[in-house]
Amino acid sequence: MQTKQTTNEGLKRAYSITITAGEIAAKVDAEIKKVAPQVQMPGFRAGKVPANLVKKMHGEQLHAQTLNDTIRESVDGLLKDEDLRPAMQPAISLNEDYEEGKDAEISVELEVLPTVEAPSTDDLKLEKLVVPVTDAQIDEAIEGIAGQNKSYKDAAKTKKAADGNQLIIDFLGKLDGEPFEGGAAEDAALVIGSGTFIPGFEEQLVGAKTGDEKTITVTFPEEYQAEHLAGKEATFDVTVKAVKVETDTKIDDEFAKNLGLDSIDKLREIMSGQLEQQTAGLTRTQMKRSLLDQLAAGHDFEVPATMVDAEFEQIWAQLQQEATKEEDPEAALKQIEEEKDDYRGIAERRVRLGLLLSEIGQANSVEVTQQEMSMLVQQASQQYREEDRERFMQYIQQDPMAAAQLRAPLYEDKVVDFLFDKADVTEREVTVEELQAAIEADEEAEVEKVKAAPKKKAAAKKAPAKKPAAKKAPAKKADADAKPAAKKAPAKKAPAKKAPAKAAAKPAAKKAPAKKAPAKKPAAKKAPAKKAD
Image (cartoon, rainbow, N blue to C red; front, top):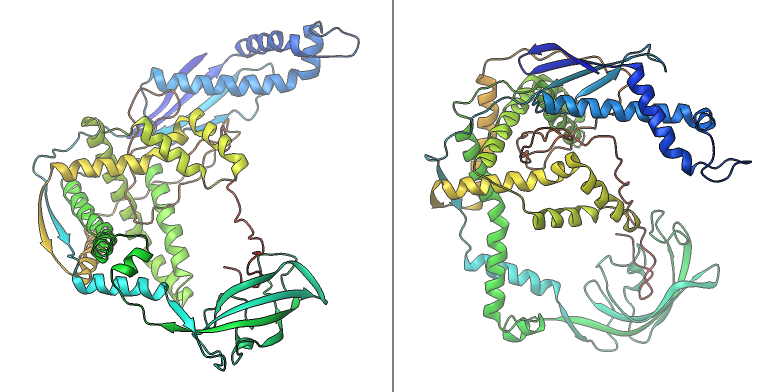
């Protein structure tokens, strides 16, 4: 096998690898000898099929598999021998005219990560905008809980049910005059106007009194969760056993005890903590933006175009999705199109910031522990069907780049937390509105900085590689809070480097199990007439 460098321009590298026909043939023969004992053929005892017959039967398949394995091993060896740190998956192609018996000419194209010195973290100064929790906010939150935990008392038997009243009912549902499975309930509580039952059910009970018996007709929604009921007309025989009216809820120790707490003071303490958490995320976003601005100052190194392209595609897809939800989608799409260059500049800035965060993390031994990683895998597996969860976890264990991609967001958060601890932080109390305004101002400032920066010519896109040995993975979906892109993990057996702040795209060698589709909810036994969520 021979390796030759063909390109070395900036961060771009390209290599040509020649694998001789003899090398490939020797590996195919070795593979045939390895599998021959397991091959069965009529007329031969198990394990006694001649190698030439095994080759005749399975030679084409074994050749393709061996060639693919050899190419992968060659590329892995190249990355290790040349001490390359790929920014993204290398583009690998096989010469078009290759056929069995000829030398294989492999083209490998990639961008490498730039050498970035970790910036100093000794002089960081941050202002933390804190929103204090007031007694009025706590009172309002508790009143909201009280509103969700209403209590009712029996009304006079002559009381006609109206909106807001609670009915205790028995009902029996029928399709074409025959009761259907799960269509009956006794002592079911229904608040008129709550919208918990299918459309038309509650409205037909307005005016009902205790002891009334009614037969009502409703049509189940087309999208109803129980397929055998969806779109069907049904009747319900209803007996009204009681009409109840809402009673005033007294917010005191007894109310707190009904919620499982010791006292109203304990409830207030819990609500105060929850309200603080609601603004803590905004405070962190504001601090992080300020931190990133300080890190970005004075750093203008070249970044891999492939990483910028991937980040831009994420931003652009999110912008287009949001534009389609506007009142005038066409105008919104036109506006973002006019600002396309600015968004590409934002993508470049975020990639650069991500690389800085990665270097800081590695220089200061920031790590994601095995226990933390196990929790991440467990949490991520929950988005798959139960029968696919084990396969997903094996996929993460066997594929370093997939694991790095899963680890990336937590790693970045840990680097940011490390920098928060290092910084000189001063606190200032503000209102929620002032905190939100500060974040919006930072967002606008980011755009203005990009607009003011000298425009760089976008790198020309390469033609797609021919006959790739491994498919290029799709770009990862953009983060909700527009986190900066960070350094990608090296492919496979690259030189030992700690996982960077944002992992590379998943390789296509192993396919993760398909995510589970939303489960269809069965009709409830207690109250089958409820509408779908």
